[in-house]
Length: 462
Image (tube, rainbow, N blue to C red; front, side):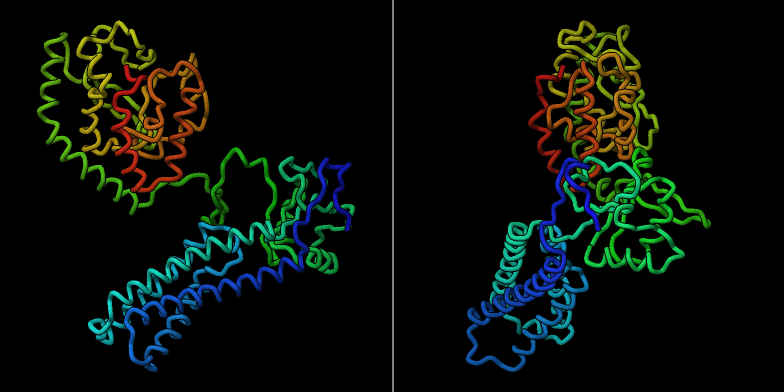
């Protein structure tokens, strides 16, 4: 079996850990992780007994302890808490362990309630025991991940098979074999050739095929039976950004989009919007009235400025703002960004723009469901970065409309607001919006709302 050498690809082939040793190491490390979890739970029981200080340990207590260890091990095993990935991925390891611990606790509380022994449970002692066990579980998981990564590096055995194609630069330095030089072919009519492929891959966890387009179907069929994670490099579909595939009516489809929030998360986000918006409108009503009167006295025209903006699902809606410019000089399409010494802005308008009070009527848009408190800021249809329309700067611009637009957002608390004089100005906003969309959580919305108070009066607010 020939490896791609330095002269051919400009980088040496690295094998961090021998494949057989890596396989054995994963088995023993996973068993060790199970033993450490059992020791942590046993320590929690020991703390409970030390605080409760019974005269003797009854048979029932021993049964409860060993039962807890068995139930937790079974639940954790089922929950993939001892998956080899948990040896090197801290977040995954701790998350799966916490889910397993919580499920075990729920099972025992259910049993205790069913047996009507909840009144006999020493709450302080049990509580301290659980805290001890949980602390040890989290601590040892983080420590194991740290030690394993330092000692072994990457435990996953990966192989790249190159078959008459150019190797992507990002694959340089991986373990690579050349299919032609190694005598490997995707001949589905030759059992001995498939046996040879299976023998080559038997000690690997993952294989990536880099091949010519006309061989991808054959490689895909050959990989179906090798019992490891098999992938084929397909740069031709990279621009589609595929998420997964589905079978629909006997036809295979490539899934390229779905809503970033499921129904439950949409309900949570809407509940937060209403919980904040309704009290805010009631509390701010005197201020809104005073601002409306000041606008009418300062210059002729309506109190509110309405403008078409792009909302969720790329649907256009009319945003509400307090009018801050003279009616005859208002830019309906938003082609001209406001500047620091803009002659279109009225006296009252300058104050309400500097303090962001002009944005308050958007609470009505939130109440009607057209906007959310937190989300990507909606832009005017004619907005430009330099001389380029926003969506022509980067085609990912349209991706941000998968969520409702917001009064504030991640871009705003990072200071990305004001005029967009260069393409970088809109790219900064776009990157923040997509980051927010891909990492949404209710706590993040609350955090952004809290931090918005710090940027209400910003140097770019004019």
